[in-house]
Image 1 (tube, one colour):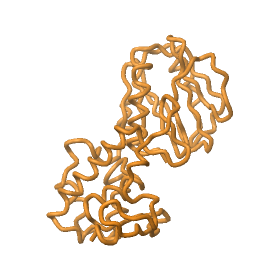
Image 2 (spheres, rainbow, N blue to C red; image 1 turned 135 degrees about the vertical axis):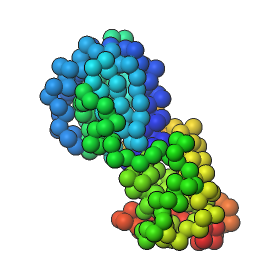
Image 3 (cartoon, rainbow, N blue to C red; image 1 turned 30 degrees about the horizontal axis):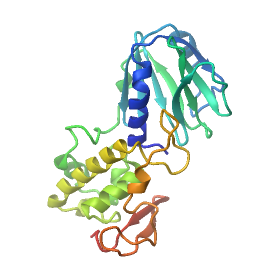
Length: 271
């Protein structure tokens, strides 16, 4: 599933092509995504200028003159800039055609993505209003992590993947951040020491920023706005490296399952 770095990479890639452009039309070939594309979106978005493109957690928000489109890539979605005349392929479900002659083409083989419409403040939409602070924002620091972890028996990795507490980290980057912070993923959040939270907050930001610089992580379906894969996978320290030597101490990386998701860690570097 595309996580925060992949979505931010997509935003940065398509922003120059869409900002200040007028949407000539929206072509919906398959409205049956995770939630059905609203029938009114085609008529309401067409003819409007894109004022700005924002990201909130894993959502992209297209702010138009009167209303906003909220897009989620789902598990296998990609959003690419291409000529509007390009022949659509299988799973190319939506085109946002711009007055430049280009279009944003949304491809989603599993159809777990979504494209929604709101005339209200998009950050108050039911899908966004309860989201936690952005991990790259000033609100997210050691004090915040200590506050949300206090008294919680859940494993620290599960806490980092709870979007009501920390947004956009996801499975890959939670494993990587915990490695860099030297914390085992199965430790109870309530048992993380106060002096460990600064390193954890720094590690989360470090891993996310590094992934954004590398264009995200390609595991299966993800490609960026230019159709290129992300290369952060080549920089991973623990994720999907079971049995391989730790890049720091050479101890074999271990794998376990937490909440039906694979977790990877170094039994020597992480305590």
